[in-house]
Length: 442
Image (cartoon, rainbow, N blue to C red; front, side, top):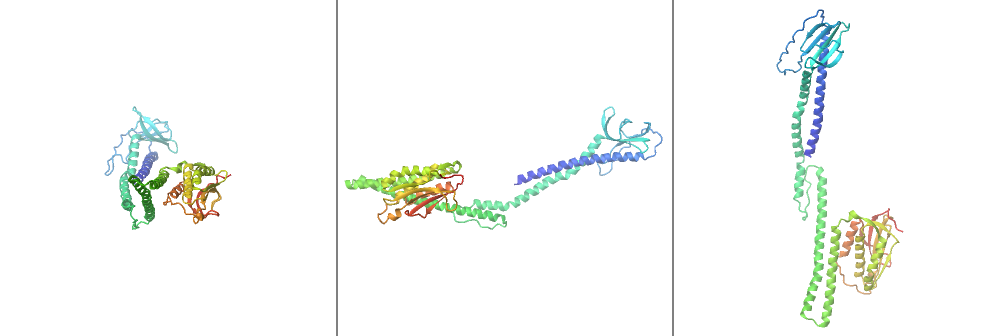
């Protein structure tokens, strides 16, 4: 801020100094031109009849408090009669030609062709003509001196204003420095936020935003800690069971108990592998930047393809898997992630329900608030069959599959939740996507 402020100040100051210098030069030039005209009018009004010899110029007197050339200029005057005879001549300037045009001019006179500023004029009767001359170098020296004196205050003003501006900005930013130190000392793992004790109201919104960010961060850390503890517990159970079964097999069990131990060992290994697979899927979703590579996806075709892949698992489970979808349903997204989410919903529906359950995958257009919003849901009637036969033990008590689906929904700016199921189904999990009016189902 200080650098930009000083830069702007120097730029504006330089423009004003340049303008002041140019104005000073122009005013000095007008001053000397006016002096030439004034002297010519004064001499023309003098009654000079006879021709006189050139007289040496009187040297300029040095006045106290003035420089040698301040407002004292050596003027040369030449006065002719109508026939061109010199009546009066004074000053150090060479004799100019009689036919000098009236008005201001710059002439080179003498052997060294020195440049002079001149003003020529006839009297009202055109009986006498006068030329007043001034050394152009002397005139320029006076102009530069006047211009320099005009910009001199600006030269002193710049460092003073820069110093004052720097001190003012530093003092004004002191509360911000203090706020930055408080933010640097915050512990995001703690439950304490920032206190609004700053005198400036402009910082209240910043403190509120930081506190909101801290609250979200602490909530996220709490969820991650809880999630990590549950994952550790979920893995600890099958791993401990695997260790016990392996130890029992190594101790030499009877044949009947060996088969049971091998079956438990196989089930626990599959359970641990399933948990690890879900964790890897979650890590894959978090690692990649999916939002930057969205492409049109035919959700209807993807539903049919995933359902066909899961059909053998449904057959082994003794359940029925069906699809209800339009011929085409395009939306912008990622086919890999959508397939991962749908596969998890189908597997959860098969894994957590008894045999004979009817599972149906449905998709279409028309959300609760938007007729152009796409949706995808997996429904089953397993809850109605639980009284008839017990369900299998839950192989995924953490709902890692639902966590994967929720993160896929977040990538697609969609919502994921359990919704009311229509008969004959009892349980339904649904993804509602954002409005996609430019995509259409057929």
